[in-house]
Length: 503
Image (tube, rainbow, N blue to C red; front, side):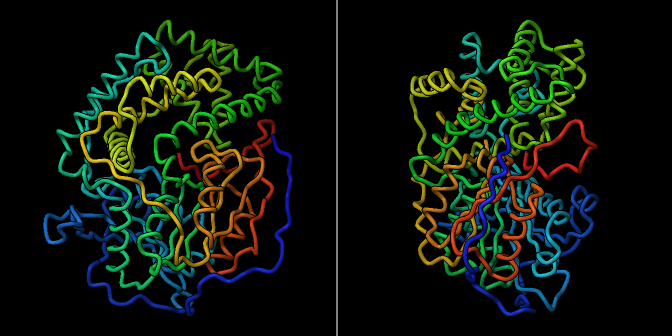
């Protein structure tokens, strides 16, 4: 897959907004940092935590409150401190506190020296007044219905209705206030509680859209902003068409993955071309349609495969599992890759649906959804139906839908947008549109790569250097640049440390 095309960084660097070294936060009366919840402190003992009350409804700021969990990893060198770096992992619904703790182990030393890292669980997620829409033990009992079969279509529509109804019944008072502009307003409450006049921000995936919305609402409060793996912010794409576009990107990436397996046939023995590998995968799906293997059915096979496309670090393990199943009848490795649908997963799914369903209008006619999925499935079958069922509750959502905020970038300082060329979750065209919508931004493209999440998490030294120069020194390339992608895994070589994956 790699062509290893590298374009030199052209011209002199330009400077982004700067702050004096050793800048200290003002008093933060709204936050009293102390011990974190045990499930945070055990894996991340360096974090300090605090709770922040924010309005349930910003139209009634003195009314009911809900509580957000905020985590901080203080700058390691107070004399070099330049401010607070808020971090969001995406989702929507990703656990921001634990993500910040994990990411701290990957960030460049200069960034750790210069910034207080601030993680936060967005409203109603993880530790921030969490919600759920269904009982995961029953609704998510695996195997789930086949996403592709016409025989299970009615069942999947019924499940979508059940999920939307469950959200209204269990979390109805929160739904009108679960959306990206409200998350952005929560971010500004965090900024104020930290005592910061401005914040810097690092957002991955959905976090790029959240950052763009924050910048649109509060441009004067942005210091530096790095948006990695960018959502397409075009108002006509949020969110229905963005989800459809994932299916196209996923099928292309699947072809690259199967090519890679075929190139290493001496290891996997699944075929010497991608068509033979596809046939092996199709054979497994056919077997699972005859009968599930424990929790593993056709839906789980699609989920495992779709998820593996987010990072090349997943490729070898899935190829081994497919080979064991197809060639030796051994399903243990494939079954072990099935993700548990526990309470935490249900909470993430609830927020994913709630925010996307409320952020923008969705088609209300079942026939339109089915038409689009059928058309996509003709050439992009992996995710066409699977991805539609993920957000199908939005067709019958029980809360108001907003018109997406138009992103213009007015008044924003220099910013950095990063994307891999073959990203599945946030297809590259979205990064181009994000850059176009933010005229003060520079776009860095990781060529011939497809990892979801690049800066500090993909092992690309040149991308890491650019991002660090920007966050620490305010230096940006003078124009858009393309950087050679990180290397694909070599299954015949000694194992290397895994990259840090967003999914």
